[in-house]
Amino acid sequence: MPTKEQVLEALSHVADPEIGKPITELDMVKQVTIDGGNVIVEVYLTIAGCPLKDRITKDVTAAVMPIDGVEHVEVVMDVMTDEQRQALVQRLRAGQPREAERPIGFWQDRGATTRAILVASGKGGVGKSSVTANLGVALAGLGYKVGIIDADVYGFSQPGMLGVMGRPTVFDNMALPLEAHGAKVISVGFLTPEDTPVIWRGPLLHKMIHQFLADVYWGDVDFVLIDMPPGTGDVSISIAQYLPGADMIVVTTPQEAAQKVAARAGKMTEQVDLNVLGVVENMSFFLCPSCNEKHRIFGQGGGAALAQQLGTELLAEIPIDHKLREGADDGKPIVVTEPESPAAAAIIDLAKRIAKKAPSLRGRRLPILGAGGGHRH
Image 1 (spheres, one colour):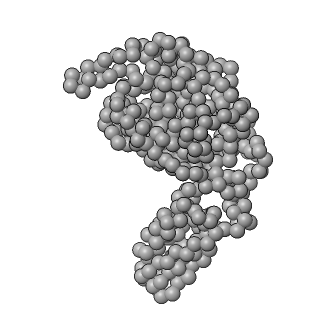
Image 2 (image 1 turned 45 degrees about the horizontal axis):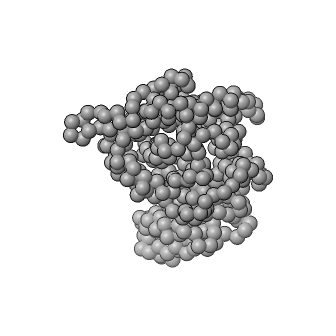
Image 3 (image 1 turned 30 degrees about the vertical axis):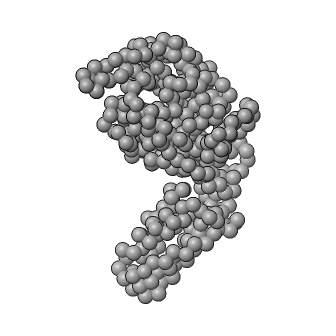
């Protein structure tokens, strides 16, 4: 006959699919009842109608069934009370207050190791969003925990490019990001009908960016990629304020005109506390499938010239590939569907190069040995 201790040990390996922590640690196990070979596990849901309750049932059953003596597993769902939900939120926020300008946990907590990377461009149409989506999925494929923030409010595209739909679960003013291809994702596209224009002025944009950073539960992520709007407007200024010392990747195309416009986005880092990590040249060339010759359709050298101008390096040259465009339209990133293709290979190599780079410590809180506070670099 199985024991309650055995069942709880098995349940300690079942993670809540949205929060990513064991259900035992989150006090989601209400009760375990054992009657011979029958095991009844009562589980608290964070909210009524949780969209992932079927997955929780499946995971609990799969964890308990292998225990010797278990013949049948029944999972019974209940819903947390307001008090239980508030206790859970406080635990996830590590006691942080509920004020509007709450600290950004993954960036401002002492000892936080998350790397924030802004993916920027001088103008639209250079493939910044598709680079962000595929880079995030590529990093997740390398085993890193990744969050993607769609900060291109007026031109949000990450939901479509990543093939993820739905509304984030929200309780006690905390939202849980959706997941796509191993990466966590948040976008105004989850909150607004796709065909409805977003007409917001500066203060609303500023508030939304703070909520995406501080009121979304990101958990322990290694990278947070931020798909920036083109140019150097309100959103860029807000993110620079909230994430001092963050890195920026500037995406451009080979044309001289695109390079000159992109330089403005890169030079913004000189006036705010950001660091240019490097340049990505998209649509660099077309690789002929029959002769394997590179055709520089949009010119040559824009990315290298921009990198030199910004005092950084050219991180990647991503070739033109119709499958990259098709994948963005279909919600199937090319790094997943065609990982051996030239474009996917370039993005995966970009992910590996970024992962190897040492994180910037500018603007970050660091623990001081023998002291209770921290200092900023």
